[in-house]
Length: 274
Image 1 (cartoon, rainbow, N blue to C red):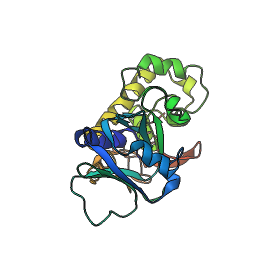
Image 2 (image 1 turned 30 degrees about the vertical axis):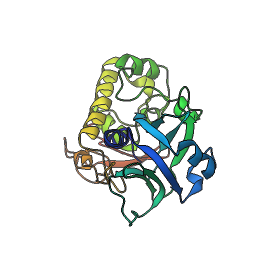
Image 3 (image 1 turned 90 degrees about the vertical axis):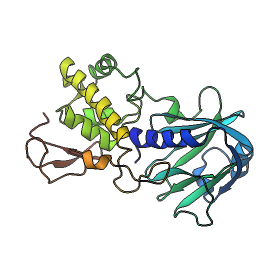
């Protein structure tokens, strides 16, 4: 699933290319991806409207339009949003929605078709529960060590399940939680209220660092992720534990372990993480 670094990578590309362009026509090949409108309502709200900006919060992308309604997108497991400057007669495989623009086109593609698109008010709350209840963004100034400590101190959940909860920190998923916990030397099964002040600071710094590194390297491509221009990310070459079960830890050489925590596949080093 695209996480904060992947979605931010897409956002930056689209922000460089879309603002000022208008949506001329929308072709919808899979209507069920649109969650709160019919295809006709969706097209009527967005066609002939200008794109003002592309923003992100957590794993959500916002296309702010110059009309009363804008577009909210969550890529889920395999969604992808790309921009092509020149229209081609050949559509990329798994293309589900085409946004014809005044110059070029934006394509929403999805292998497993689990993504979601919503019409939302251009001003105010989105009306989408998972979006309006997000915690602070993992790279925002509001995500501080003090905030994290306050949230952890009376919480009895495992730290892995806590960090995956988007109401606590927005944008983290399996990859970056595993990598942050490794960098902070915390076993994923540790209870939140068993994490002290110094370790909380270490965890906060690790979360910010792995997210920023993920953005710097253009996201992590394990299977399906591509950026706004259709290229794969490179951060997968920097992963220390995620997807490396049975291989040696890059720090101590101990075999990386794979377990399930809160129903999610989890990778860690039993020697480095306590």
